[in-house]
Image (cartoon, rainbow, N blue to C red; front, side, top):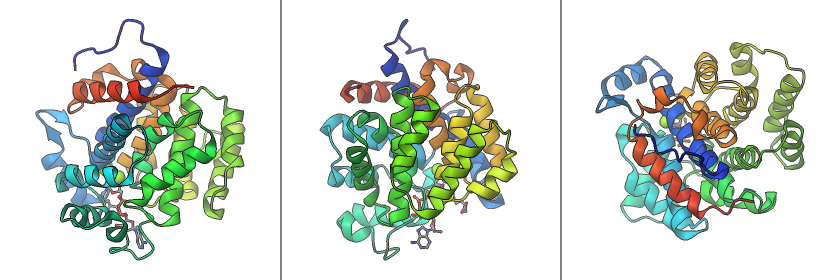
Length: 313
Ligand code: F2R
Ligand code: MG
Ligand code: MG
């Protein structure tokens, strides 16, 4: 990767680039660790492109959201649906329900009907949360209600289930808080002030208590109590915990901890990595890892374009 970092980058640009590249880097790094032996075997065969770490659906959809916001300046569900459908490739490892919805949209079906064809209540997978970091950056400073409404709208296209939308809102909210430099106590106050399902409320309370007590909780306990699954409720509080626990640690420690938690490693990593990057910036990401990331130069350019469209509070 050539060095696109300006000599003294405006802090917000650095943080926006850090957030989006944090998603991509943790996604690509984590992809070989996701799923069971079959997924591992497949990823050993297709997991590099031109010798670089290949990123997955998490990164593709995050950059689709960023591009749509940069071009239109708002959440436009029809535009997002078409972008998601056009950029869908099976080889990026999409969730099975999301893949079927996107193929339906590509064949001309409207997203509002396609999104209920696979699961009548909509999907509660973490696929809407994994692409929600740019929403937090774009709507930072516009108030929690506006931000959460935007996250729900962007989620609904593929994840109409309340849990799928809730995961997106949680990740977007925490992204906005770390991006604007809130203190840990302000972050938790803002999280507590929003309304979450009982399961997620309980997990967030556990995470807050662990972090407040500065207890070094083992990855196996994090996995057991907060979750490590492909569902939104079973992965988003985990990602928030991992990000906030590692905010002052090196990015590679966050990656290593996420791998030891296990399960949906690329996605928990992508969400946690995006939150970490929004707080610490591109300059803090490990350059030697960025050099191994597929299309890193293009992703940095796209993140810059997105940053120009964000009005930083
Ligand atoms: N697809 C993958 N990884 C390969 C599989 C990993 C492994 N087998 C594992 O299960 O851990 N990764 C990518 O998919 C995830 C994002 O998925 P998304 O976009 O949410 O997809 P989907 O299909 O909508 O939901 C995921 C699964 O959740 C269950 N589910 C969701 N809603 C449901 C409902 N209403 N009723 C019943 N089940 C529901 C299904 O099992 C879905 O397949 C990320 O990890 C990304 O990296
Ligand atoms: Mg993925
Ligand atoms: Mg995943």
